[in-house]
Image (cartoon, rainbow, N blue to C red; front, side, top):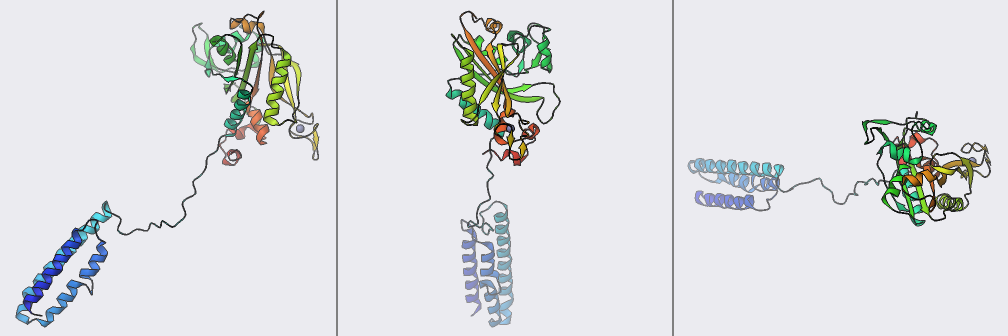
Length: 352
Ligand SMILES: [Zn+2]
């Protein structure tokens, strides 16, 4: 190879290198480097051929070759830099054949799930869902429900008051029960009315295994012509059987709530034992009685109907209320109410 041929060869290598380096998408810079500048690369081999060229011509050719090498190195460094910054992935550890990461599946909170089940049961019985505010005025939480001022029954519900007053100049409060929704629903529509509501209530109580300062209730109200205790008993029984199965029995014991007359506590047969005792001895859930107290109910007091401008001579109705935590604990075998608020995944995962 003479000097002219050598220069032509160098020029050809530079030409093909610039084509390669300009290519879009860019070629792998490592592969280009190996192809041109590697130990057996095109330029390295050409520089090795210099030894066949007479010494006096060799020197300028060597300078040309080195300049070409430096230029190529600079362009390769540039290409590597841009590929690292934002350019196309030229080399990657991504293995598309690997299995994906497990995607954790969420579940409803046991309380939400219980409320949904309760709602389904009442929608099936022809009730519609109603709503009311968590911060109530004295009128809706107490007075309209036949708790006049200074009535001793107000003391049964330890109330959280809010530092704000209603139009009557009385302190607003966090509702102590879902019963104000009865009044709000009746204010909105003429009888007949058949509504239910699930939601949060607040009482200033110490927290223990069966009490909390914030908990949930379900409320139901039915007002029509000739509604009697028999309608209430049938509805409550059907509802409990829907929730806990057809083997569940219910019974009513006389009780007092200001907004119903007559009033009753509803018991259901213990879902954990038959008659208070099981193979392990006395049932701890019902304490051996075979019955669980689950609900307060009764016929709507005439004074409550009057508050809503319903004529008690013409209309009658029933109402009931129950703690949702109690149902959730019975449905999912949770022994301590606090477990419902601790967000322990082992409890939450029980409900799918
Ligand atoms: Zn029992």
